[in-house]
Length: 222
Image (cartoon, rainbow, N blue to C red; front, side, top):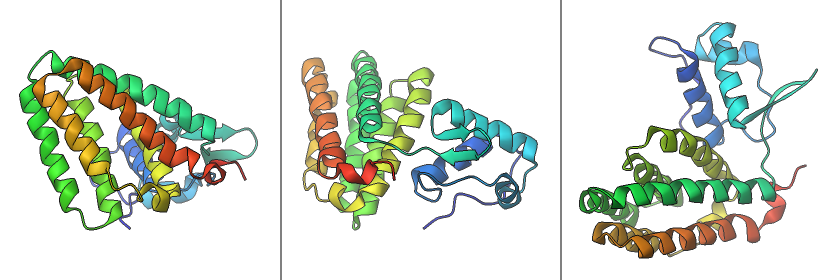
């Protein structure tokens, strides 16, 4: 597995540190419930504690880290209700992004999304398919041209990665991911607003069912 906790090779800022930690959380390098050791992280990243604390504070504000008084800072643990709420918010962001796209260059956007779907069809491993699944939705929001939607979506995608990592086997069981994304991308390319919105809602419902309904116990607090 690629390590996201390593020395920074460019100017150290809290935002860069936050990005590194966010990636480590999303990919399971920092697991839910894990305590973050400030001294060890500062050593691994090659930074001083000041910017590290600022970066960690940003993730605490996003809800990816939780500070417990007299105990320390921990990676958040997602309950089934947390995951449902995250998907509710993520759905709102992606539907808003799709509406923005459909008011502009939707043919070009659809073509870009279909290229990702083509890569998904060539994916060899379930992990590769999952990353392309996420890349599709990240690009969908980016194509809206809204920096605010993109910022909000970044946290939701990290939480989605945490869910997929925890339920890798059951999430990978779906044989319809490529087809679902292709139909959605095609609807965007055709400029069909109602169909796109309908498909996005159904897609989120399906993903949530696979992540939660099949194995709620995985997300239950220990």
